[in-house]
Amino acid sequence: MIGEKTRSELMEIAGRYPQARSGLLPMLHLVQSVEGQVTSEGIELCAEILDISAAEVSGVATFYTMYKRRPVGDYHVGVCTNTLCAIMGGDLIFERLKEHLDIGNDETTPVSPGGGAGKTVTLEHIECNAACDYAPVMMVNWEFMDNQTPQSATQLVDDLRAGKEVTSTRGPRICTWREAERVLAGYPDDRADEGPSAGHASLVGLKIAREQQWTAPPVEASGPTEGDMAAEQAVEQADTARAESETKVQEGTEGDK
Ligand code: FES
Image (cartoon, rainbow, N blue to C red; front, side, top):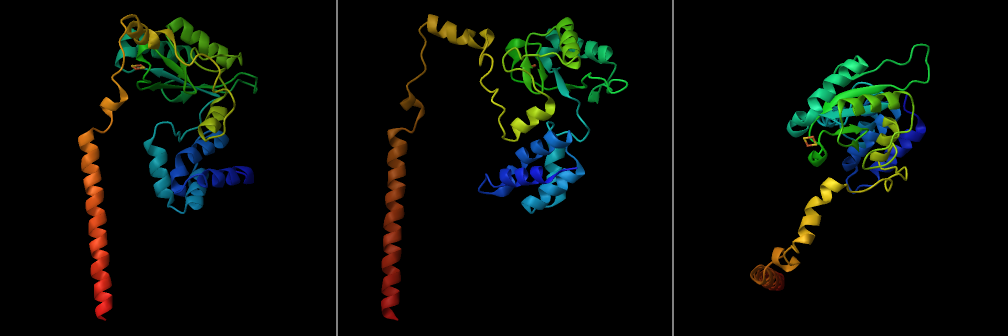
């Protein structure tokens, strides 16, 4: 059930954009932060606020894979099984986790019998995270867990389920999926600056460039050339001249009346 607070936050998000419907993506993240998925109620409410059809909202919610139409657990665990990660061990990690958690792709571990403190995990194989230099890569709530092995992966999900504090290898302490969804809706949790922003593997190219004294070409080289600027100026002058002559013609016509 979506309450008044969420309704007013959804309206606040829509109000951030010159075209309110541009706010739909963060609005759907906010719905997920409250409902644990994109619900029919959330779709109807977004449609009402943005004055568009529920079918249009639904079209967006079913197109992007970060929007879930089934409930997600306390943590979303993604395993990259795209080509590089797959051959570096991603396929093995995914198989090991399915076996270890006793669930399949896009499924969630059951709540602890008797409603214990154990946390739930949703497992999904995901596409390339643009982190191939750390393959095989996993993500928890879209935070990187680099250079994984089947052993480290099972330890990771065990720690998450036990409620232990887990930190991304290149980012902040891991919050719950719903909390992460609220951040994606545009409500920061002040963890953005936690952890290293870049790791060794990403900086190797920079290190080599410095050793070799390679530098980037001057900015002017990639900007507009003198020829481009002259052409632009000529177009501007032509526009001005045309506008002036049109004004004169119009004035003349009005004078004849
Ligand atoms: S293939 Fe896994 S991050 Fe690129």
